[in-house]
Amino acid sequence: MREPLTNPAETGTLLLEFGTLSKLTGKPIFYDKAKRALVETYKRRSPLGLVGSSINVETGAWTDAGSHIGGGIDSYYEYLWKCWLLFGDKECRNMWSASIPAINKYLADETRGELWYGHAEMQTGRRTETTYGALDAFFPALLALSGDHERARRLQASSFKMWNLYGVEPETLDYKTMRVVAGAYHLRPEIVESTYYLYHFTGDSQYRRMGEKLFNDFVRFCRTDAGYAALADVVTKQQRDEMESFALAETFKYFYLLFAPPGTLDFDKTVFNTEAHPLRRTW
Image 1 (cartoon, rainbow, N blue to C red):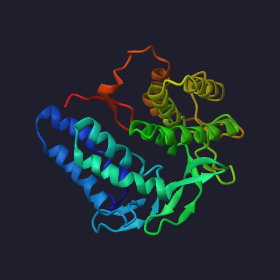
Image 2 (spheres, rainbow, N blue to C red):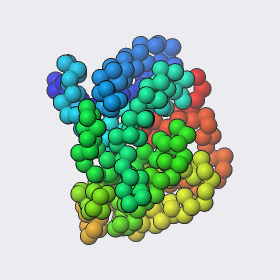
Image 3 (cartoon, rainbow, N blue to C red):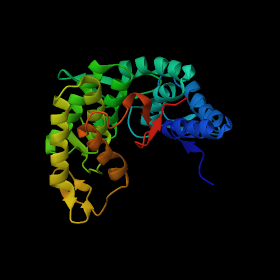
Image 4 (cartoon, rainbow, N blue to C red):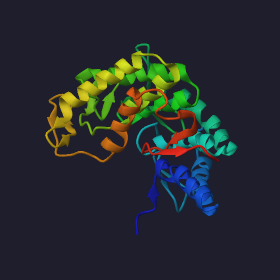
């Protein structure tokens, strides 16, 4: 039996898949159970409107009050908006509308005229870390999808700056000092995903040029005879004996879609889950 500790990404990132199962089977129980987990997490947000990094599902108490948009929280916010898109669930839309102002107020960080998103204490909003990384780089896509194209553009520019620092993005960067905190690169898809979304919504050719730079660097430093290797360190470019399945399921998929001919995918009738599996907007 696993411990009762979990995080918002685990409790809040079941709704698209289980909701689809409910629609396909005609049994609402799957959607209802998944949505309850999301709603119960939302109910426990702080008075500021933020959620933490770790919660005890038996007591409902937060065990880590650190708030951010990165791994462990990321897809919780993603599914609030995508639940509304896929199922037309107004409660999910309202939860998103109540959450995004707090994210932009307490997590967004203006540094050197650039937009980044850092960490804060969920109860007070106090800045606790000035770190941003490969997993945070999904957020421009979500901002663009929800209609905030200006913030999406600015944050994507920061993500691209992080990538160009060493020709491949690190897992974690201190954006205040521009020093690498965790130097591995796991072939993550998030920055490519955001590049694709911004190209779709803006039609701006700079995002295809950006994608070309990402892809050329990706091939240059990660390609091997047997596939594509993660990097142990983005500074030295030392390769690891590792290629996660998401490199094929997500990273290459978003690269393909970025450069695919128009009409390859009906974007307006498709919602991608957090693992880049397309779900049709048919309900």
